Length: 51
Image (tube, rainbow, N blue to C red; front, side, top):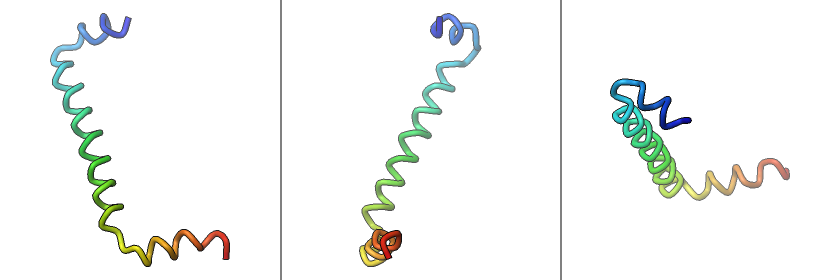
């Protein structure tokens, strides 16, 4: 059913590829941000709910 719905939209392939790229770029950037994040700030935020 989904395939029939998508085939009726002109240019649907480009929309799907664009949305996949946005999804991947977003999560790669979040991963890079978390990797480069200051560890002291991360420890402070981790302990905050318990204090």
